[in-house]
Image (cartoon, rainbow, N blue to C red; front, side, top):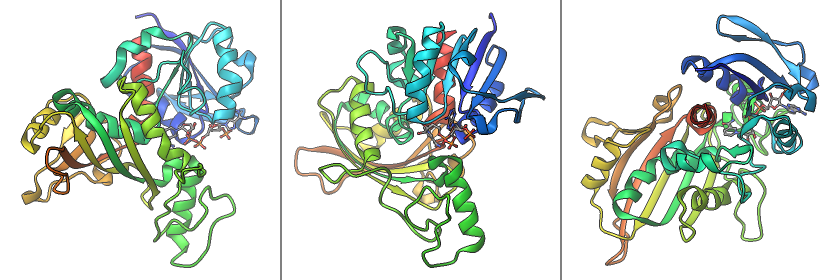
Length: 336
Ligand SMILES: NC(=O)c1ccc[n+]([C@@H]2O[C@H](COP(=O)([O-])OP(=O)(O)OC[C@H]3O[C@@H](n4cnc5c(N)ncnc54)[C@H](OP(=O)(O)O)[C@@H]3O)[C@@H](O)[C@H]2O)c1
């Protein structure tokens, strides 16, 4: 396979560093890696394939000769620089929110809608991390019974807020026991250690946060289900890595917990961990540093009215890997 010149926009961040590891692990055909970040990081050395690569400031000219860009920076940098990369002939797989809902940008989870990749016009978006984790778990059940309505609560790790989030939780766990001690560079409004923060992003007129509306808006696009109804509550939890989700889902047709477990057991990207008698259920520590979405606690929703086919379940996934870096590299693999 011909090697590609691959740039990572945001190479020094949590997702960017993980992308470099995933490219290496999956033996992606990288002829040359171009790590891009802010001017602050220019000249910094990052490990790659047993050697080192030097970080370059992300300017439009830095994309000359680049075949594939993996985006791991914020919305503003993506909006400014991805079109510059496309104008220079690159195809971009972007992790930010910037283009996800644009009509001409495919939004892709390869286990669900890999065929949408072919429709790209230079930019492909990676979905929100909580959306990826939840939908990889729900998609096999949708194939059996057709999902109609999803009620989901997420328990999102500190590293979901990038390096500043991770650094803040490490700092707090080291020195903060109680009180209102929030570090100067903390991305969180309140202390996270010993706490839960039921806000990720700003609030809209319906009192949902920006993170909460992503699950529905992105899920409808990825699954090609314009009528899918979703209510989501997102909570930041003092976990370093891996998001967890409690999901109740209503279906068009009956589906038993055993049928659901059978579908999950053979689904790509999923590992069924569901043996309550043996205390086997998904937990973020077990989901970290690997790519499968762990799904368990599958059970009938006892509150569902007569005639409503509903299940509840619990899932965990490494949001830096499958929720970001691995999903992006999987999309890039389809490109080559
Ligand atoms: N963390 C997650 O779990 C996760 C999951 C899914 C999606 N995402 C998305 O992935 C993206 C990256 O998130 P992250 O968590 O990796 O954030 P992060 O750790 O804060 O890293 C941000 C990266 O962006 C770079 N950057 C900042 N300003 C820049 C500029 N003006 N020009 C070029 N590069 C600049 C930073 O470079 P410097 O080091 O030079 O500042 C750094 O490499 C975000 O869009 C985020 O929403 C994150």
